Length: 166
Image (tube, rainbow, N blue to C red):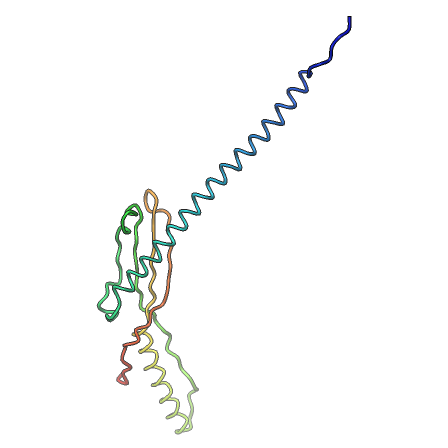
């Protein structure tokens, strides 16, 4: 009688199963990572859209008004259907440093020139402080708003009068 070797040995079957298990585990892990990346991408896209829309809403609220007429801080739920997101804004005055040019001089003409330059720089600094604001909008989400993304820009009030009074 002859023995028939028409099958696989137990060790061959176990090695094949081990290789298949490793391959399927890798495929499932890649699929899981891919799904997570897609969710994060959608979340980033949505938050970016909410930031842009809230900045536009803030611009419309400011349009034609002085900086003093607009509330400096505002916190609210984002527009429907995104009430689980919190939108906020902060409008900050920018403090410019006092610029000084020239040096103390004993020459009367130079000293007078330095005083004039210093007066002009004070007026310009005052004007810029009154005419420019930093606007930051923030979108927060999560169970306790632990995730936040902010967008900042600078606004210039082109209607700000330049006063030569100190």
